[in-house]
Image (cartoon, rainbow, N blue to C red):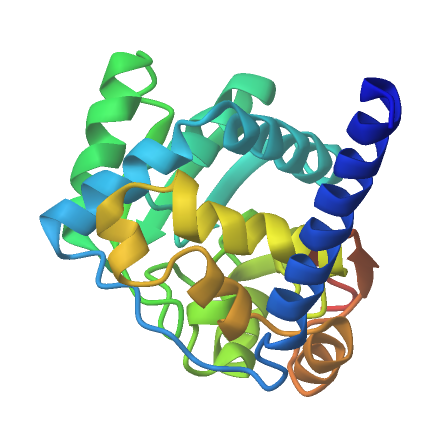
Amino acid sequence: MSRGKWLVISAGLLAGAAMAGGWSVYSRRAIERIPSAEGLDDPAIALAYGRVAALPQMALMRRLVAQRATALCAVGEAADIGCGTGLLATELARQAPDLHITGVDLATEMLAQAQEHAARMAMAGRVTFRLGNGNRLPFEDRSLDLAVSTLSLHHWADPVSVFNEIARVLRPGGAFLIADLRRDMPPPFYLLVWFATRVVVPPTLRHIGEPLASRNAAYDPYEVARLAQASRLTGWRMTTGPLWLTVEGKMIGA
């Protein structure tokens, strides 16, 4: 057998083995939702999340989310719910100079990183941060023009309650964009998340099973639609991609 044929056969065998291994991993995925806890008040975990949030692919995601959100509303008062390290809040401020953004998060460790980042970006006046819970947002009724949340929905113990809070704090015509992973992502994207959990992320996150734990805790589009329908959000629509889903729109009525 010639060397060329041997290389072709070997490559075929390796590809077949990889496909079989990938299908074996995918076939063992969690089908039902498994709630997860982040533990972001642990300084080591918060620091690891901050490192992952700074990766180029995460920066690209933030730019796209900010573009979509500011297309809905680019002026007034905005909130980033579950703001984490504040990178999306500062990206919103960069893209929409007439927005003032308040980041809200439960984790004091993440808020400390967010404040430091805003100061480094010279945006401390346009971006502020508050400790708060999505079930009881620290804003007056009808005081916001835009509410944004990314990669937090799957951690909310009562999503309908948070949706209702978003509806409460938005002015009539106020815009919202809630983006998250989708649990029913296709096999190649599931395997990408699985690989990232096993190989790519810092050991601290690997120990708590992230980001696969977030995928397992995420909802599928039909589940999110039912949650939105049960809430006081109006004017919403669902959009989906291979890894993500969004609930977005503008509040209708008084």
